[in-house]
Image (cartoon, rainbow, N blue to C red; front, side):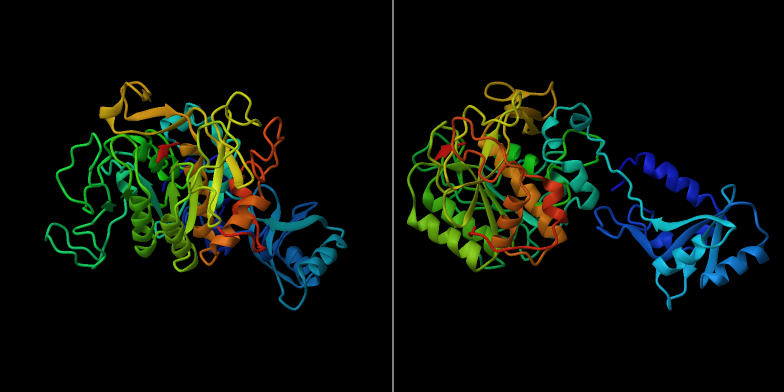
Length: 467
């Protein structure tokens, strides 16, 4: 992806103009340089075995060679106009010892490491630039994107009302089932869903106001409510494409799994089937922006299998009833429950958010910008002009922010278990004051960059009304 670069690149450009850089290993190892892939993480602070040596007065090549020889180093190149040499230290001595030797030379003004610089990546998506996505500053998203923007192999299953797979900010990130042959009327991968090239629908419309012609399960994942498309965009809308919004994990893949009908209503049976479908199809993250008061053993067993057997990280919304009861399935022990924080007072609970001891973390949930099928603009959805984007609030949209953060974590550290992911999220969260709602934020507000950078992990607990 071609991300806009900041001031660091100006400095890098000055280096690139010098003749010595063409043969320097720094050009290939610099994590913001032309040869690097977006999101490649390089935590080194300096190029190993290299120093920058500044001379007090210009020296001829022979004089510089004598100084380098005394420090057991060899000149790789010069930065003309600065009288600085880029040198490689002999493997037989340490960089620290070479630095000491240089500093002992009267002709040397200083010797320092060849520090690694990283380009600052800023998305050019219009609503990000226009500050409609204000909340990314609170969770340090841009710093996280400097490290990782999401590996396409990391699949986020969005269990919801369906997804508009043709939306211009989503279509490039929609999952394709390579085991299925489109349009042949055969369940090629024997998963119970025929021709499920882009996901599966477990809603048959029985007992609802929705008019569905096909019997569930089927491959019609179209969104007939808008809620699922919105959640999908929060999690993984395409980034840096000069339009609309950017999702929390703009390089991850979205798997549409329809378990809620056109009224935003679902059942335990549909949800359980959707969870197992997603887990078996390879979803590493499962987002559930729905819930109810009562627990379901059937859904609980599906969640246990997804967590224990398939290693899926499951994230769910705490609920929007403004009560001291985390909705189910969010309060299941195998799920990461997410509450919502406010916009105007970002360190406080959103007015509508449920709370309780099962909440793991919180994320912004008020005035969230995301994708929407254009036909749903108006009515319940506050669209941004005439474009297929809207502003909305709810724990439904706090949860996919966390799902996106989890997708970035798994892109950087694919071997993490669901329990390790939860421990990582909670241990790097910023604690928030409880106020009148004990434990409403769990361990605190997620910090996307810190969740990616931590290198040691500890085990923690495992991980229909609309929210």
